[in-house]
Image 1 (cartoon, rainbow, N blue to C red):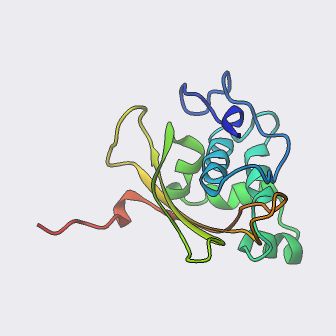
Image 2 (cartoon, rainbow, N blue to C red):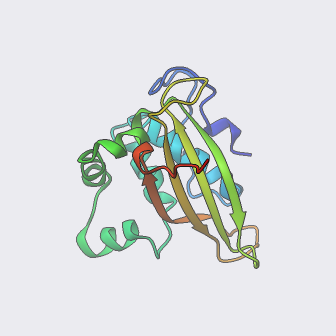
Length: 167
């Protein structure tokens, strides 16, 4: 489930095969599918309407996230959050990546927290020095059918912050 909500390819920002989710958060998605869905929505941010991708991110933000806190206390809107993200060139990869791959996935012993690293490929079909990593922490309140995986935090790690391997 959820595959119909993900882009099947094409250029960054292309909307011909992307079908935006209409029901979110969706309890039928796994933690990894939530990460993929949100990244795809951000890549296609203005489909079907301006900043809809950021709205999807808001819909999958947990009550403990900074997004939820800022929405509640400051009245943060999707448009304002996109403007904030676009203030840093490093964050533009969220909206301009060609493809997203999950590099790492791990879960807490109780299975209620998920830790994911996604790599945003800036060029279709291969890695480049411009690729960006995004770390996600997700949580769920339980394993019942109605429980959803929600994003607690999202940390964007540009290529210049990537760990160098020792020789």
